[in-house]
Length: 572
Ligand code: ATP
Ligand code: MG
Image (cartoon, rainbow, N blue to C red; front, side, top):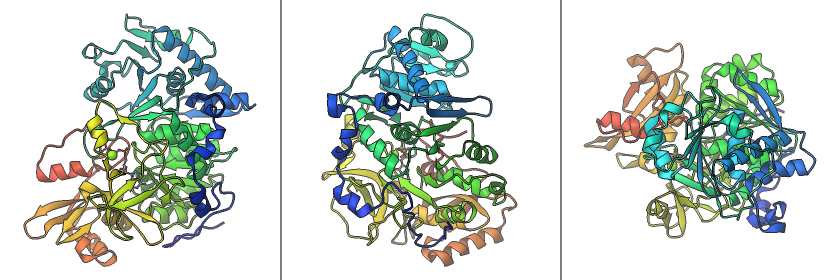
């Protein structure tokens, strides 16, 4: 098989779970798959039963559910062991008074314990709240306070960032690893795990709360988004359709569970589909990542544009040193995927990288490039069967093809948020004229492919033209000198706004007026004169969220000397 990079890349139907997209769209009905789940028989359900326990009941208890590595630890756990460990944790939580509906947060680096804890929390009907390990005290306090968390699971290293005495609702802190320190509110993980091995399962209603995720904070203060057990229908089908998971797959999603991708695509979709899941802890290093792909024989790999761009910048030689022959499906989400990255994937990995679009609020993949469809690089593909997606005006009217507008979805779908925690007003603000409005700007072409343009607030108006930052950024990274680019509009008395590009350079390039002019000309001749940046700034790095998204609002605030707003999710 050889993959040709082109404006339209051929479909890959071989072995695809979703073979006929058009047919699936006409037949799609979320309830069709409900016969697969327990509630069909009993009326009650629990995500952890469907994701873990049922595989043990169906004779797959000895199958590896989790390979974990972080360079130091290297462990594996079967579905049976995931069940036992999460039951132990669940019993431990009960022993410290945690009940159905309570919020229990997890604030620690990726480790097997993190996953046992998350499963244990949901097993007893409590609501899990994963928090990325790099958050500092203020960010932790905001989130624990907002959610009214009753317990937190953390490590001794991170303990000082939890302001226990400022959080009246917080009763217990579970410490994973380290000494057996015991104060009234502290309890060690090992003690918790030794309470009882008894099987526990709290049977839930489909609409009961399961996970709260705080959004990435790209556009402002993070919101607490509630997902319910019903999301399992969607996570299961996204696993089948978007990630194309098959029984024998070894699957790796690089996202941290602190972000929705790390739970929905990192836990639920793979485990609901009964595949073997790889989790790698630690930070990005190209060599480590290729090594992980090789070592576990990863077949389906889900990462983010920022990681693919970094791998691309590490050169074409590095991947050749590894045996990546088992890889058969590549996925990307979280940010727009530049066509240049897809070209790299086709040339170096001989594979299409499938962009798929979603947000914390959608809970799972809702728009994707499916294996069964042709792919137009730069497009985020087509809606999942069962999802009605459109482009609407600011008044809530549907727009014709090729008109840029608000990307919107018809409510409801199973993984959709059920509330913004503590903020009903914010929740209501997402809806307009019967649509859920995403806050992203996009258009749909005549053939139904959706094209992301930027956040609504980031779209630039220059000399009467609307310019989506993504298109300009994609042209910029096409130039061999540019590693990453972030584009904003800067107010201008004549043009309304002018385009300013912040870029980081690839190794081997140094900033000069000639180079920047060459880059500008590249955009001018390959995209459009009006879209060519008039201002450039070369930076050593981009301000990014910890989930790897370029923070254009921060670039803009710096540029205009304005307050930067909530920076709790920004990388150092
Ligand atoms: P906040 O809502 O706090 O400002 P955020 O929107 O970045 O942060 P997430 O829910 O993690 O928080 O990210 C969702 C957003 O990520 C989408 O609204 C979209 O802008 C962007 N995104 C996700 N996937 C893609 C994709 N495939 N292509 C383009 N953009 C994407
Ligand atoms: Mg958002």
